[in-house]
Length: 564
Image (tube, rainbow, N blue to C red; front, side, top):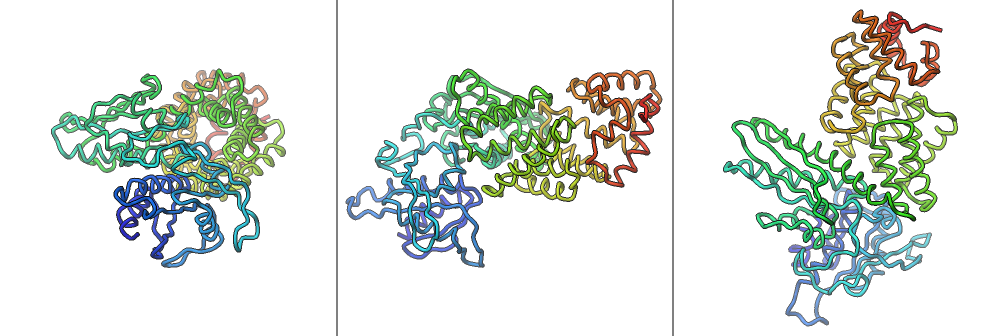
């Protein structure tokens, strides 16, 4: 038994970012930061056990039972305990030898992120737990139609349909003679796998499996079938003088089509920092590209399910900010919630749209939208307190409610949960600006743009940077960023309004009046400083207001914007 733990179970726990809490001789307790990692680890352990002891008669083989639960625990130095642990132990007892039982809470959270089939065993009364527990079971033999043994990642049959957001990052090829680049290439592969694994609904094949393809001819269609994924990422590293060039391409595993490609270059002096920068940007870009690709697969569906609709919603949300895209995103999230009233992602999506409408002064029912957005997010966080996108939306909402300290806390929490969340960094930068700290806001906004330079909403990043520089009276920088914002999104009225102020500060009054006219044409009801202030009752921090009156308002008056 200890050999099984030492040679299979403990390495699998470590591979999936878990921690072995204690070993009781005939059992083991482990905890994981991700419920997806926990379930994937459990299944891989059971598959690994099927390959062990091949010469031992079936009746003498050791078979494990595994239970997986999600819940709060009490932590001591060498132990964890509480109902969260107790339920996992009861699930362990309910599992068949070689099987995995998970709670209904776990099943809700993993959704279709993993290519495993679970049988609903209904509600079960378990010892010392007041309420019945909904139980689902996975078993190696009959439950999924899989064979009882599994010798390699390529010998087991793939699932019937790969999850919509599923990918394998193949080992990056080192095209240089420099062995240092090999470490860099392998590090990119490993770090990118970790970063993508943190994204909601993303199934990412583990590096151990991906590295079995290293140095071998690649047939992406075959890899897609073998691993049950829809996307394959290939990359290469090449040294050219003192520069290191990284090429990457995202491929559709169904048909071999190239969906996206990019190139990154960095100096050799600081490869460690470059590795962090590149993986962060790649994770953000890949998330956008894969969501868009997944949504395009569902556009022609007559009867899409909740997951399809959520993909459509996020795809619309990621597109350039406009009233039409916002409405389409909300409509898709609403339909998803009707189909699946338990959906966390649908609630977060709806709240994200409502919070955006509130901060953009597009809401026609402010109180109702605030109430609904808050309720949706509270329900989502109650079920998954570690969902970074929920904290990001809550931070956006809190800012619209003029609860700026809470906004900052929520956004910092979102970034702690996902350091590559460019939108959370942008929102934090805006909150810092609205508390009168544009100097602190600028690095956050720059980091957001560095992580996601091709974001369809990059106009927002440029506008935020332009607004901050305007508050600091850095007129040339402000004009540069605001012109970029106007070019990137010509349908939003804020960038030309701020550009008019910046041009007024510089004395280019004719150009300032032209920008002001464009802003008023886009939003006719905001045609004076009084009406502009009325559309933004939330942002009234005294320090911010003082900066605003001494820069933005003065400069707009120069451009011809009336007070009344």
